[in-house]
Length: 494
Image 1 (cartoon, rainbow, N blue to C red):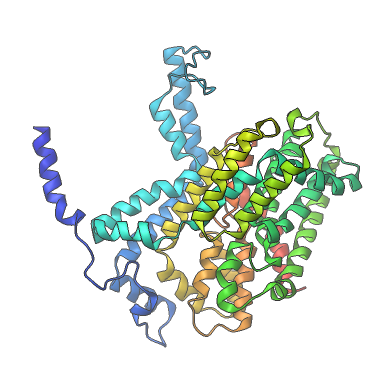
Image 2 (image 1 turned 90 degrees about the vertical axis):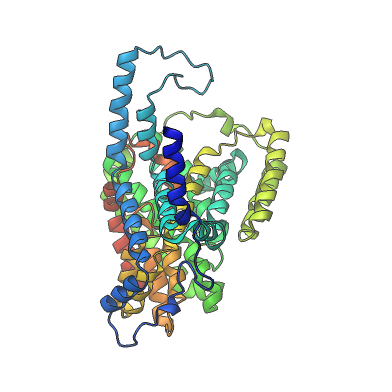
């Protein structure tokens, strides 16, 4: 009976599954195809676009559900732990049964593991991308879904982040970064507070040269070792995480080639390195230093009371031959150079893996789990983000200079800031002042949520083990709020 039921479902669904858009129909629709009235306000424009393409509303509702899901991950993780505890109590598992040598008992709770997956922030947008894909198939047909996911969506940035994270977290690169920052920390006697200040000041500025994802990876790994391992208070942990995210977001604006939100507009608007530093870079440096000083003063007593502990990873202290480090930097530089060409930087990474195997006695294990999760997060985000232009573009285009700055800041909290700046290039008639406002606003809000800036998931993935129930979105928002306001002051007043 079941086989006939299955066959009936397939036959009924076939016309929907294999329906394709009529020739000439684009998905998503070009913004110019809506023919908005020149004098129409923002709400009439949004209503008209929703009526012209009802799927706009479907895609945005799914996106908003994904955003809400990110705020519920801590609660879902709590449910997963409860189910697993009940499962262990029922089966009275022996913790030493580990036949596959993965460090966990072989017998697990299937519902608990599923809930764990749903509680991973990095998996949220990928999960809802499945829902979105099913909706596209249902409303537009399978051909349209395949064309959108396979050809329209650009996955270059997620792939790049996976490779750059893996390279930046290798022992030779980490050791070089640690030695460089140690020189700065030595000015403060090498105490934890000196490490805290040097990492949060220097590492974000490296994002202008080695890319923000690489700078985030290095900063998060060093903060884990030099700060979070010392078990500071939860309040200070969230303040530091928010400060890191904000500083990384603005630290990549000294050049025109390293920060994703800048990359999206630099070529279209003719911005070079000189323009970036004179209009953005010095504001970013001032904002980073001011934010660090304010948080140091606010947490001065606790920061000064932190005491260093013996290093847990002695291999990191073992010397690495200079030539090995140089080869790693060459691979890192090649990846940054070829950041827009996946075939080349992925091919280069395969050669790197061979080199890492040949020099295994100078390496730590190349861990791809965190980079792949972050790549999965960003891939899901760009899938959803590509269908949000219908409402973001008119919102940006309807604002004045100052409202545009704050509007971009707020919108960035709910979408990747690179998407915000890209959509700004589609708005005709932007003056230089408007261009500055939208880019400055986008990088200002890049620390408010984990989805606001592409490198944020990398930092959260590395540091979330220090937060017992995972990183709370509200805690991150509160931690980033003060430095975000300081950055507003730096961009608009200084």
